[in-house]
Length: 221
View 1 (cartoon, rainbow, N blue to C red):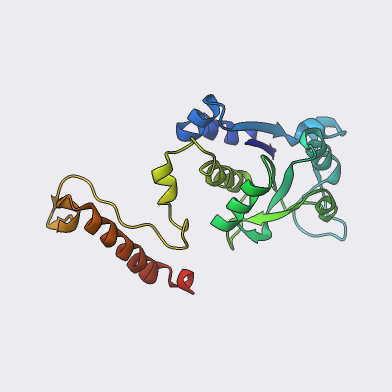
View 2 (view 1 turned 30 degrees about the vertical axis):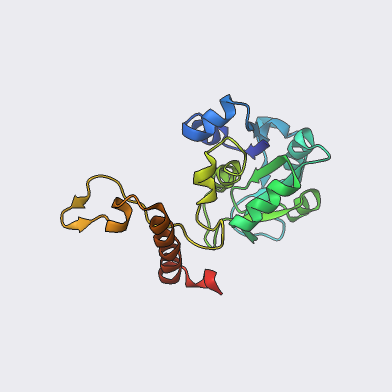
C-alpha cells in the first residue's frame, strides 16, 4: 500500500518511518511511504503557505493553492484523500478496515495553524480526527493512521498478532503475561501454566469479555 503524507514538517514523518516495524515493512516493499512538503507547491515567495483569515480573527489559515497543488501532484484515480482535522470522523478500527478495502493509495494532509481554507474540502474525500482534542499539527495523527492501517497489510506483522488485536472482533484483547511467574506477590494465572491449550483458549475468551466489560462497556452495546 502507498501512503503519501503532505506536511509542512517532513522531518517529523521521516524520523518515525525510519524506525521499527514500519521501517522493516518499507524495506520489504510491503508499504510505500512518501513525504511531501506542502511548501514545495506554493507560488509565493519564501515558501508562504498560509495567510490571515477573511473576516478577521486569530492565527493563520492554510491557503488553497499550495495544498491543492500538492494533492494533485500525487493523486491518481485510485487514491483516497483525507484532511486531518478535529472536525473529521473519528478514526476507528472499522474505518481503517474500510480504507484498506477501498484503496491501495492513501493521501493524508496534515493541518497546522488555525486550519485549512474551507474550499480545500472540494478536493478531498473527507476529514479524519483521532479524537475530541486539538493538536498543534496533523503529523502525529497521520503517523497513527498510517501505522494502524499498515497492520492490515499481510506480512507487516504476523497473522496471529493481527487476528488477536483489540477491536478485531469488537472486543478488547486478553491480558498477557511473561516471566517471572511471581512478581512481588502478583502471580501469573495458573491456567496459563498448565499447557492445556483448550482451557487457555477458553480462559482468554472470557478475559476478553471481562476486559471489555470493565474498560470499554460501550463496545458491547
